[in-house]
Image (spheres, helix red, strand yellow):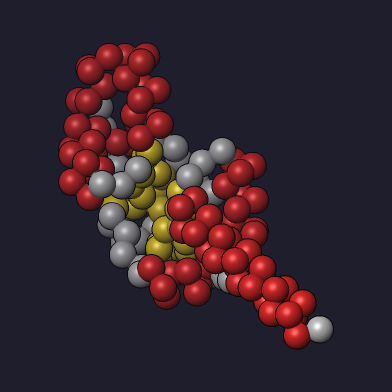
Length: 143
């Protein structure tokens, strides 16, 4: 399965913010949409960073609630790993595992077109394994 197929199934909707939004506003957006990360763009779809719950918790431990006044640009991960629509499920899983993150923006022509989460990847991998097991059972039953 490819990223394109995953996005076609789950949708291309992505919650984004601009770098000048406060962390408090970003926290409210994460809570409202019940998501674990938000992609930071320049408003024209070019990825500038990503802000995750982990980023927020780490900064909270360092600075206390004072950091809620900071701009997202001060807290976000700016060097964002991305994938393309032609990446396979296994390639995306490897990128996420090696980078130790749970959200991977998808780009086309330098612009954001979707986000793949570890949940999306695991769900599709489980479905593949179940399908393969059923094919093996069917083969054995007819042999």
